[in-house]
Figure 1 (tube, helix red, strand yellow):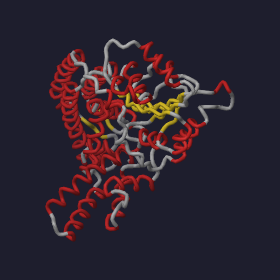
Figure 2 (cartoon, one colour):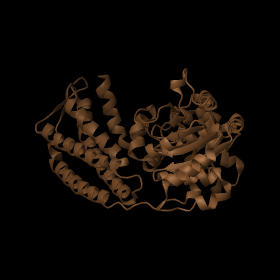
Figure 3 (cartoon, helix red, strand yellow):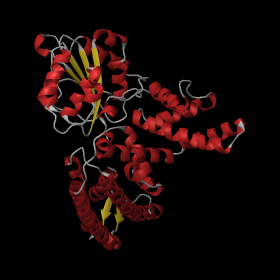
Amino acid sequence: MAAYGAAVSLKNTIQSLLESSRILLVPPSPQILRSAYDAMSCLLKVLSKLDSTGYSKIRTKVNALDDRIKEVVWEFEDLLESQYADQILQQLESERDRLPFSVDMQSLRQSVDRFIERMTVMEAEYNMELLNMPEEEGQPLSSRIDFRGINSNMVGLSELFEKVRDFLLLGGEGEDEDAKENCLLVTGMAGVGKTTLVKKVFDDPSILTHFDLRTWVKVGRKCESNETLRCILAQLDRSNRDQMLIQRDDDDIEKLVGLLEDRLKDKKCLIVLDDVWKWDTRLMSTLQVKNVQILLTSRLGIEDSPNYCAVSLLDKVESKRLLGEKVFGEKGFPPYLEELGDKIAQKCEDLPLMIVTVAELLTKDNKCIAEELLNKEELNKSIQEYWTEVAEKQYSSVFVEAYNHISEANGRKIMCQMWHYPIISSVLSCCFLNSRLVICWILLRIM
């Protein structure tokens, strides 16, 4: 969640100060900073406990507390950055060639003590909320097999599409019989296009011809083996669809397996399990039948999967096309926004999730501008001015808001994956740095 990213940022900032050869910390500054560093290490351990909670837990209160922790950490990091940035800038103005810079953090001692006290209290509250997280009510089974609204208009990924399709058509065959598998995992971070890719394969004419039966189940965080089997059977036997979609606590798994084996007899079947959060050994062993091919999508790296392929970032042309289509439909950018659209797409650095999120925000803002202006010429001018600000401004509010949306919607695990992408460095600069600190950061690295 967002608090984890804030804690990592503060911890890294403190570590840079403690280890920098360009900064001389006046005693007892190192001890003061070390206590805050240790507090962040402790906080990260507490926040990591969320990963061990069940996927079926409702996280509303935990998320709200996470947001409060984030704000407290950000507030302290702003205070810390202001303290050392002001001191460095003063020394740069008086003695430009001076190195190392002398930084005294003694005036922050009371602020650090108060910050640590607040963290201790909030950690205890966080632990308590984790223990009392209520169970999430299951979704109606019918909602798990409804894939009509999934968009299969794919941008890029043509080579990966062919790889996945050919794997299914060849029956998972390798170079020899021992390499034959019936399961393929499509993995990648949230929003990268896994479901879109798989839906495109699912609807491909060659797949429709090759398989006698096809089923699609959205697994999600909470979906038991019996529920998944019921969702599959509901699509394989239309006459018993309604009966299968009734949730039961006393399911006879062996009976469901028997029904599945009977329905799949002498039939080639493709089973898609979308948004899988954990490997279900019992279910997968049941589905590992010679005439069945299984295609999974997951934002997590599932080690148990025998075969996998990763969905990666888009190229520059695909990024611009995706942004244009998400905001303006198939026609793409109007001529007067073509160049600005290209610049905004480049700022998304080929990350599909960021492109889609930014596109949603731009679409919303375009509508707000349109509601205020009826004259088309004035409307186009106002939209162009707004897009120019988004494209040219170093720390655009659109990208800050997009980052916040991503972190709130996808949680800490996805944020950790995103640290590996270039976009994060610029987005985190929007969220965690002010212009005064940026100046010091640059100077400390070029001198």
